[in-house]
Image 1 (cartoon, rainbow, N blue to C red):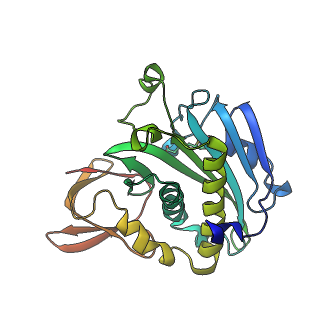
Image 2 (image 1 turned 30 degrees about the vertical axis):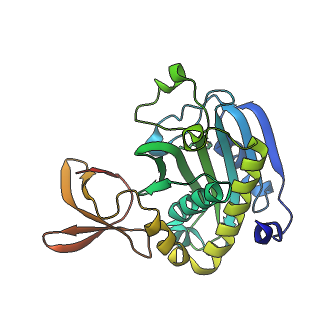
Length: 252
Ligand code: BTN
C-alpha cells in the first residue's frame, strides 16, 4: 500500500450516478484524456460485456469503473494486457483482505467457481501509432437476487468472500492504484512480469478442461499461460498454445 501511494497523484476520476457505459464515456473522449483518468458509476444503462454481450449493472451493487491509458508502442503491444489487468485487480482485492479470488482464462475473476468480476479492454488506433485503451471492470459487490437472474452464468459477489465489505471509495481507489501501477509495469516489460502471478491465481491450474472454438472441442489439462497470454493446454500430442478470440474454456 505504502509503495502504491508513492506513485504520481491520481489522474481525474469522473463519477456518475447513472451512465450508459463507463467504457463508452472514456472512449468518446480519448483525445482529451491523460493516462490514468477514470470513470466510475453506480449504475449503467448500457453496460458492455465481452463478445458484444450486455453487462447487467444494477444500481449500487457493483464496482463499475473504467480507466484510460495510452500505449505509445501501439496496438500490437497491448496483447495480453487484459490478463495483466486481471492480476492487478485480484492483487488489489488481496491487499484489502479478500483472499481466494482466482482468474479464469482469459480474464474473468472467479470466486469458488463462480464469476465475481469481468474485464473488458477496448482499444482504438492505427498501425504504427500510439493506441488508446479503455480498461473496464465490473465487480459484483452485493447483488439483489432478482437482478442476478438476468445474468446468464453462475456468479458470486464480494460479500461472499468477506461479509464485511470495505468502503466502496477505498475499494475503487485501491483498484485504480493497482491498475495504474500494473499499466506502468506492462508498458515497460509487457505481460512477462505478470505470468508467474497469473499462473499462481489460475482457477483451472492442472485440471482437465475443454476448449470450445466454434464447433470444435479440444480437451486437455490446463497448464497456465505463456508470455503472450496464450493458454497452455497439455494434450495427447504435447502442450499446445491457444490465444484469445472466440475461444471459451470449460471444465472438461
Ligand atoms: C465481461 O463480459 O466479462 C466483461 C464485463 C465488463 C463490464 C465493465 S463494467 C465497467 C465497464 N463499462 C462497460 O460498459 N463495461 C465494463
